[in-house]
Image 1 (cartoon, rainbow, N blue to C red):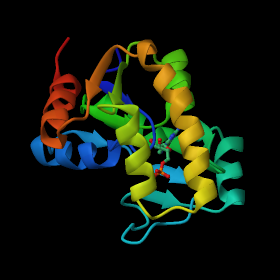
Image 2 (tube, rainbow, N blue to C red; image 1 turned 135 degrees about the horizontal axis):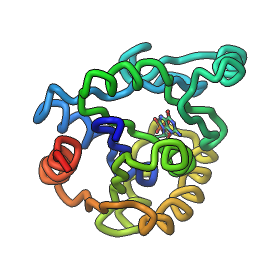
Image 3 (cartoon, rainbow, N blue to C red; image 1 turned 180 degrees about the vertical axis):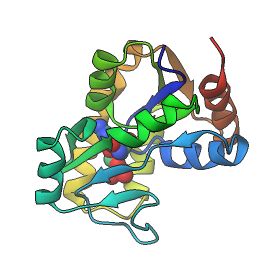
Amino acid sequence: MPARLTVLSGPSGVGKGTVVAALRRLVPHVWVSVSATTRAPRPGERDGREYRFVDHDAFAQMIADDALLEWAEFAGNRYGTPRTPVQKHLSVDDPTLLEIELEGARQVRASMPDARFVFLAPPSVEELVDRLHGRGTESAEAVAARLARAEVEMAAASEFDHVVVNRDVEQAALEVAALVTADD
Ligand code: 5GP
């Protein structure tokens, strides 16, 4: 199989970013893909670190060039995984992690069925709603779009190989790290 590709998905607000940050500390040799997005940076986000922030034309060009392993629209913006860096890391057997939403995960499953698919779930739907409202970085419309999408994503949990519940960030990161670095 193409080495160690893990796809981490789960609804917006579940804490994927926080869990991935904890995972980076636990297993620094895991390579985490940097996605391209048309979304504007949030305060504290830096181009090339959290995302490559691009405009709509540049994103369309990446699609035209077939430069994305997968991509999707999410709450009014586009997000995609640059293909070449993923292939490069897999070719040297680096454990590799993509943190993407459901449509993208489905595309990766179609093209790379041997990858490992992990769903990060909230302890409860109420908690997810609280977190999305509490984040304070998005407009009311964006929060509503993310909530609607979260329902669809939650319903898809059974499509994944593993479900990790994010009750405690460190514990969830340990569980995901074990899956990302597992040998089978
Ligand atoms: P956010 O705007 O909160 O950073 O991300 C919104 C959603 O897009 C999250 O569910 C995140 O996992 C997802 N996402 C981030 N990068 C990618 C990507 O490259 N491809 C896809 N399909 N989804 C992504």
